[in-house]
Image (cartoon, rainbow over all chains, first blue to last red; front, side, top):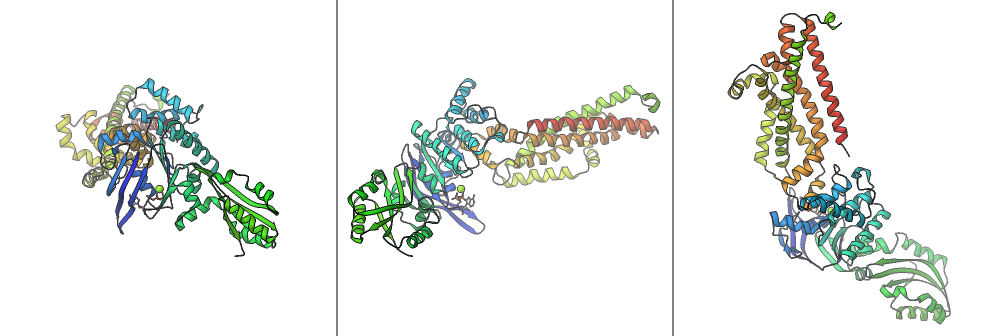
Amino acid sequence: MISIKNVQKIYASKQGQVKAVDDVNIEITEGEIFGVIGYSGAGKSTLIRMLNGLEIPSDGTITVANRVVSKIKGRSLRQARQEISMIFQHFNLLWSRTVKENIAFPLEIAGIDKAERTNRVNELIKLVGLEGRENAYPSELSGGQKQRVGIARALANNPKVLLCDEATSALDPQTTDSILDLLVDINKRLGLTIVLITHEMHVIQKICHRVAVMEAGRIVELGSVLEVFKNPQQPITKRFVQQVTEPEETKETADHLIERFPKGKIVQLTFVGEATEQPLITNLIRHHEVTVNILQGKINQTQNGSYGTLFVHLDGDIKEITRAIEYIRSQLVGVEVLTNA
Amino acid sequence: MLEQFFPNVKWDRMWEATTETLYMTSISVIATFILGIILGLLLFLTSKGNIWENKPINTIISAIVNIFRSIPFILLIVLLIPFTKLIVGSMIGENAALPALIIGAAPFYARMVEIGLREIDKGVIEAAKSMGAKTSTIILKVLLPESMPALVSGITVTAISLVSFTAMAGVIGAGGLGNLAYLEGFQRGRFDVTLMATVVILVIVFIIQFVGDYITTKLDKR
Ligand SMILES: Nc1ncnc2c1ncn2[C@@H]1O[C@H](COP(=O)(O)OP(=O)(O)OP(=O)(O)O)[C@@H](O)[C@H]1O
Ligand SMILES: [Mg+2]
């Protein structure tokens, strides 16, 4: 659906040239939710804006839905843009138009007649759950509702691809989740390919199938979300993964736990994919002479399985503890015995 | 009652002068609105980072606008005499004032239009582009509607200036309340005529201000 080949974007600035995007290669398949994560200034916006021709690559080729968007101009670019729509961090609604009129805008651009526009707008209002707010002006809506208008507007012309530039960064966590749920729903229902950029790993974890990690214009890591969570390679990726898997205090907590339980062992278990669904603790107690004390844990759902960590305290005969740990390992669960730091 | 305080005022002349002033003001406001929006759009669109970015054209329009905006109106009328004679055919009467009124006010208004357009969130223009909008659609459906409150409050201010410009033009012979106040009032020492003409001008200005403010608040949905 989307093919990014050897793409570079160089900006000329007073201080010299800025390589905003540096030799990026990505293939995104139809129906996929693909995330790009990176810190501020990594080049994420520049990259996503090249997908609908808002920026033109300095080098390389970008193909979206069989159109070479990096080459086309004028009328054909405008037509392509009706198939590649975009939502924005600050929503970018027309304040002079009501919800209904905002959603109708892309339909006016596409030259759809009035009666059909009205029908389509009503459909979209239902799809994004804005019934009853049709005649409100953007200034009368909450952030989450504004983004729903943005999404409805983006879907108006039945696009093939939806680009999301930090679409949830201006929203509170709860609203973020409801917007993300809506995006997953749309992806499943309409088979829409979604590309989203963010600096929050939570967003990636919650809805993306695959993720690319971007640093200083380059893609430094790319893979399925679960794979990246399980086995992050680059230091920057590890930091992003930590954003969601371990709370900040974990390290301190671990030290604290070791002090509190001088006997036995504190073990950190890491579950990935199906491993989260087996009755591990039950089996552990049934087959081994150990007491298991659950201290702390967290399980994260991703689009291709879950990922979780659990801190337990094992007590009993030292040999039995060792055997128990071996058993856990055999269940394809990661085990790390914590020692004093 | 009125006759007592304004013994020298000829009401039919006063009314005639008022309609002349209203005529000059409304024609010049309409023309200034259109010309100012065109110039303001050009200034905005050719400026850096916009759709028709073009340094030379922007510099030229900007220079013309600044020059005409800086010439005192009274001198502009005099400077434009040959031009006015050419297109109106005379220097006397309301129509003779129109070229100077429009040329004096349009650049002033164009700057206000440009400022109004600059206040539009860049993101909204970009959103329209990302939907595949043509430049004409962006102008008609994004730029003008989104800046409409600023355009209306700007034309209100401009219209009020135009009322006072018509009075100045009147002194030179263009008719209207300024002409009446000067010829019948000042030159013949009839203070009451000058005072009455002033009152009528003030009423016109207050009405323009009131209507302009009302429309501006009605339009502003931000
Ligand atoms: N129009 C431009 N002219 C010059 N430099 C630019 C331009 N746009 C972006 N850049 C530079 O390119 C780099 C990448 O910017 P970009 O906006 O793509 O980052 P980002 O990853 O989206 O960051 P953020 O999370 O802050 O939005 C930055 O160093 C930025 O200064
Ligand atoms: Mg950005």
